[in-house]
Structures are given as structure tokens and as C-alpha cells.
Length: 488
Image 1: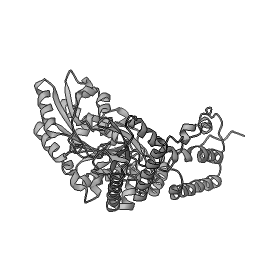
Image 2 (image 1 turned 90 degrees about the horizontal axis):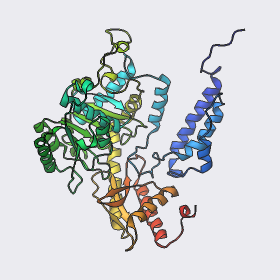
Image 3 (image 1 turned 90 degrees about the vertical axis):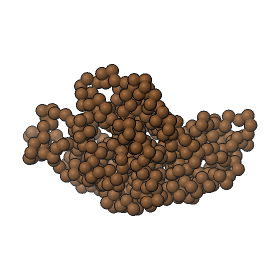
Image 4 (image 1 turned 180 degrees about the horizontal axis):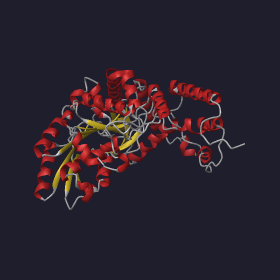
């Protein structure tokens, strides 16, 4: 009797179906019970060791593998779905997004090209996003891993616009390009200049004003100096929601300057761009509709599960000039599966692309921009309440304004203490307590406790719990009381 032909499908679907339903129910229970558990907890050494096994040669029972997930992975994740997570600008995710990931995984569609419905879903998401931000209906764009990739694409688009499509063949050819962003720009911007072959010295970091926005007068002066020095200014990057304090540049003024100087205008709106969903916050983004390209993340304020970044491009021809290719095995046709050109691989860097768009499409359909906007406005209200609480506590001091949803503060320390180390220890203590998860940043040379309110589940009570934890931990350290982490 001949051997059966190999397949990865089960011999029967009954057991797998039952286990799948159990997995789904367990994750619903996990999401529903988030508040009852710790935000984050350190991973024990034995759990770390258990995740460093040998390469599996023979298959294992899936139910046993799932139990290892429940024991070794689920309890020790980042914690961003928890309402007490405020450390970094991470969205909290939703059950709708989780289900969309399941559906997308079942389809296993490759959105690099060809003519199929998932690409139309992505094009619809891009059209909705362009409409939300006021860009033309003819705009194009893609979903990417996140704004780090989207900002890199923005730099590449601007490079091609400045030097022409031949830059793809010949490189910079000695051109001395100069781009501009504020000192508050995200760290992915200088990395994009590195990856694009421009070098980080080609990025001019312009000072900010007291509100954390780029100084437009200083920007104009820097551009003039660079032109006089033989440089070729090519790109201005505005920030909508800075990483440290949530500031938004004067985008309308930047747009006018870029147009007058004939520069590509790109906006890094990683989380701030989606403030457009909240009517009270939309005026902060005036001018974004004039951008040549915009980077943003749906996995932040839109609460879509990771990862779901986006690049919008005003002129489709600019994207095609930067990325289109003519390979024998990627030739489109007028009919059949090879129809539907231009394909996503012609307007971005990836050929193999997952169906990220489904979770964005389902999130927007299920909740609508009005409800998402209400969540965004609520996050900002919680941040204002947190700032007021910090201002009311004599032991604390706020270190920056709160234009959106990020509060930066620190615990005061007696003279002679290393206040930066003191606050860094407080943050680690609070994280390891499981009660809250702030992070740190540096403002004006001082270490700050940074709380970013991004999760739709976070309430004022959670912000109060963070402050209570900081005060209690600070008091214990001031009193010299050994904490659990000190006794480890």
C-alpha cells in the first residue's frame, strides 16, 4: 500500500476545531479580564529557559504546544492592552481586530499584487484615510509595518522627486541633499536618512519653541544657509504628535514654506494624525491636507492590533517613479488574475505583503471614526486630569506642556541626590509592581517619567493609580526601605 501524500491539514477536523474554539474563548476571557491582572510582570528565569529549546524535528501535540503558550507567553507579554499601560505610544487592540486577524490568517492572501478582493479592501482603507486627512481622492498609499517604514518611504519619495527616477540606477551622483525636521522628531527619521544612503548628517534638526513645535524662522534660516553652502534642500518633515510630549508642528506654515522653497512636504503623524477623528482636535492638523506624503499608525489611536502602519502619497506618479518595476514574472495583464495594475509592489518596497488592511477595514466599519474620535478625545482628557493631579502633588513636578495625551513629570528629590537615577528606579519599581507601566524620556537634560495615554480602556482612575504608585514608591525609596527588586 502506497504512503499517503504529505499534507499539513489534520486527518480530521473535529479535534482541531474544538481546540480552536477553546483558544478563541480563552483570548476573549483574557481581554475581558485585563484589568484584574498585572499590567506587566518580569519573566522568571525558568520560563525564559523553557523558550530556548532545540529545533523541533518531529511534530508535537498542538494542545500541548498551546498549553506552553498559556504558561510561557500569555502572562509575560508587553502589557499594552491593559488600561494601566502608559509607557509608550501603543494602542490597546480590540476583540474586533483580533477576529479580523483570524480571518486574514485563514485567507492567507498576498497583497503584493494581482487582481483580488483583499487589494480592493486596502485601497478602500487608503481612500478613507485620505478623505479623513483632506488629501485628494486621487491619492495613493499602502499599509506597512509602521511609521518607521512609512517615514522611510516618505524620504525615498522625496529623494526621487529631487533627483529624478535615475537615482534608482545611479545613486546620489554626488548630490548633497539636505532635509529638515525638528529636534523633537522621532528617531526613525535619522534612521531613514541612513537607510536611504543620505547619511544622518543630511538631516538638519531644527530647534523647537516652548511648545515643542519646530521653529519655522530658524528652519527658513537653515535652508538659506544650506543653499548658500551648495547643498540641495529637498524635504521638510512636520511632526503631528511628537514622541516626547505630543506636540504638533504648525503644519500650515510648514506647507507654505515647503511650497515656496519647492521642497517635498512630509508629515510624520504616527499617532497624532488620527486626531483628525476628534472634531475638537482637528484644527491642530490644519495644513496636513497640503502634504505630499503622510505617515501614520492605525495600531496606535485607532486601536488596530499590531502591526498596521500607513503611508499616504498625494501624487500616485511619485510613488510609481520611486518603486515601479518591470520584471518578467510580475507583468500585469488586461484580464485574469494578473490584472488590477498598478499593484502595491509598484508603489512601495514589499512584494510579499500580508492582509493588514482587513483589521483596519473591520475596525473602521465596526466602530466608525466618530467613536474612535471620542476615544482619542477621552485619552487627551485623561492626560489633562493626570497633569492636574501631578500639579497638585508637592512631591511631583511637571516638565512639559500637555498638548495632546502625553504627560512628562518627575518625583522631586532632596539636595545631593541623583534625581535622574531616583526617578529611573521609581519607574522600574512601578513597572515591576504590575500596577502601572510608565516609561522615561529626557527633556532639557532631565530624566522624566513619561505617561502616554493611548489605550481606549484607560480611565482617570488608572492615571490616579499611576500617581499613587509613583508617590508610594518614591516615599519608600526616600525612607531607605528596601524594595522587592533591591532584594533580588
